[in-house]
Image 1 (cartoon, rainbow, N blue to C red):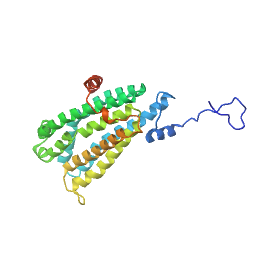
Image 2: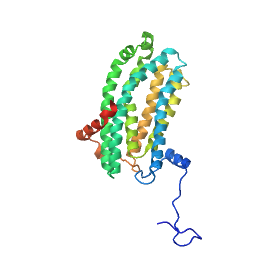
Image 3: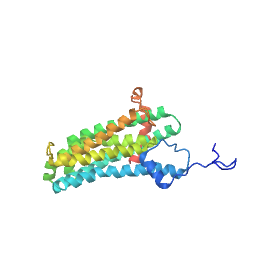
Image 4: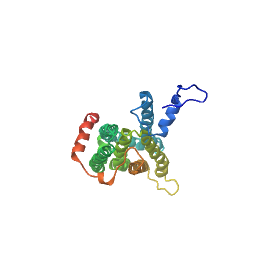
Length: 279
């Protein structure tokens, strides 16, 4: 029930405060435990969409930062990153496809007020991502130089850039985990956390890449390989922060030790939901 304002006649109830558009934007970037099933639909869409748009923007910054610094090394370094990113598109496809299914299942369980089942779906989604990452990683490490050749790289590019390709494909687990665990947060209504994860990962990448590529201070000069190392470390740090948030007890979704077990039936459902999105 509302309260009578001072000086108002009995029966006149106060209305809940109406937030402005910019207040809603600030809340979206800051994050809040908002019940998206109640209140205006438009406001709920803004609260979810703003951090998701910023998240996708920051995901693209990884390659932009790498190419920017690689431009100072020469055209072969830029060609290495560009061709490898083309191959990594397949990894992004798998990651985004699986994230569709994870988001749908987690969101449904959260909406049904079943956080334990939402956590169970999250665990199975992460397990699927790890399995896919191992398969892609082994193939990438073994076939890295050959993949560059298939993409049209010159012998010089293959000679100087095969380590970059192997590290990026071999460490693809951090890409898959970033997508999948952020999908879990979005499905649970914590889109702002997903945005913060990529902010941390990008800041580390932007700082480490030039240090490792050009051998600044105590860092070794790794050339274009340094971009792969910096990017993988940045993304890996973001994944560690994601896992930390999943283990905390104050989030919308919390994973408990006893839930860490493979459940083929749940994994099959996730694959069915993700199949169309992947293709």
